[in-house]
Length: 84
Image (cartoon, rainbow, N blue to C red; front, side):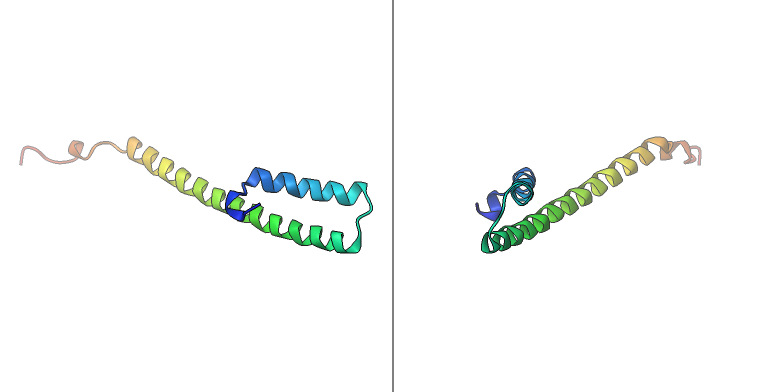
């Protein structure tokens, strides 16, 4: 599976399958090492995706909060002197 086709959900599922394989069956040393290495790659991928999502959530939240602040402020024309 190419990395560009990998999604968080697919990576998490594969990681779960690797974990289950270690828990339920005897794995040869070579196979275990390969699974361990793949697991570390998947963990790195998942952490990166979670970090990206966390950053996007922060940006969205900041935009929302900035919009809310603008809505709460009275319009500037209420403070300008139009008689002057």
